[in-house]
Length: 462
Ligand SMILES: *Cc1c(COP(=O)(O)O)cnc(C)c1O
Image (cartoon, rainbow, N blue to C red; front, side):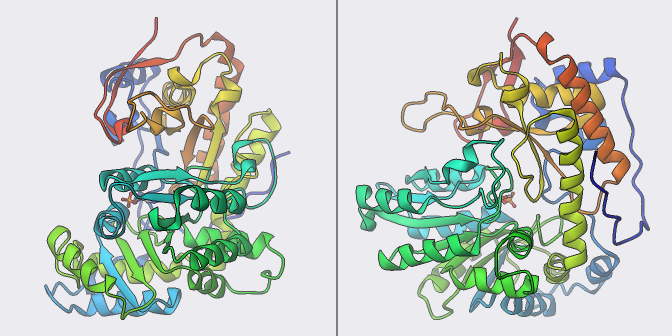
């Protein structure tokens, strides 16, 4: 029996029409898109779950903030409002706006990484991995083993494997580790949270070896909600207090604000110690790549909406509803025997495509196969989080074999209703019934060298 859906803690004031194409049209559109869902037009998707990034619905306070945005080139009041919010919530000395998460990575990583260096993470997000590799450094994922077993229901599957982290530092030498990156929540492992205890242990190791600890903080609020719900000792703490404690363990953070800060565009860099020499270097890179340091590639109105969104994102009622949507969808999949990264994480349901399509090998991309089927079935756009996304080894050019093959249904914030979520569940159930008829996957006919999944062309294997 599906669990109860938690009602929306808001009502709807502005609506955006949706259109469902016929099945024939959808089959034609996906072929024209070279079987890459990123090449589809948004208007051809009935329910768009490609990402929860920048696809969120802003509140009336945020839209009012858009009108109040101060467009001064330097020192806009919206900038100061954002800095005050950032310092209040994260308790960091220096806050730098940038236009999105990967801009933060582009500004910061070349200052700390380069050829011969390594960065170690509980798991790198795709653009984060790319920006490490663009500096010439190499990435090492170090997530706990439980993350690799989607059926295993244990809390905090996003955690760093601390024993392995120590071993990796010993193996490569602390002086060669440019950065430890803690991704909260762990996006690539299925939006799985990191516990406070794990963060504390990782910070201790980083400090012992004098390695900087960067929080990849896109989903800081959802992570805090899981800590409050599942970690002993945190049930009575506010989300804000949990966020502040979590950030107290980091030296810096890089953040895509397009997720938990509920804006359509924006990002942040934080440096704990405002007197760090890193601050001047960040400002200099920011001015070259993004814009003057008081706007960082954003309009004043974006800064204003972000300052408001940072607070809306840590509201307990909102978070309960938000995570409740995931739990509702997951419970419907449980009823149907459909496997996913469980327990369900923060920003979407990561369906175990390998379990649904055991006949499709990793190099024919089961996660991508299921994503294409979902589009054909119900006009739902999702994406592969598996070997297709992971890409090729940067040194050998060989296709990497991912630890899991997921199809991610990322749920935009405050956008879809219970009826939409039922359509997602019904579509997956319909595909599961005919999954045995899908004999082969896809091959890539063209790909760029880095972040290939955004642009590649594919074709069905006959
Ligand atoms: C989205 C995301 C990024 C990159 O942010 P963009 O705003 O998309 O550039 C980096 N890390 C994580 C964990 C993310 O989810």
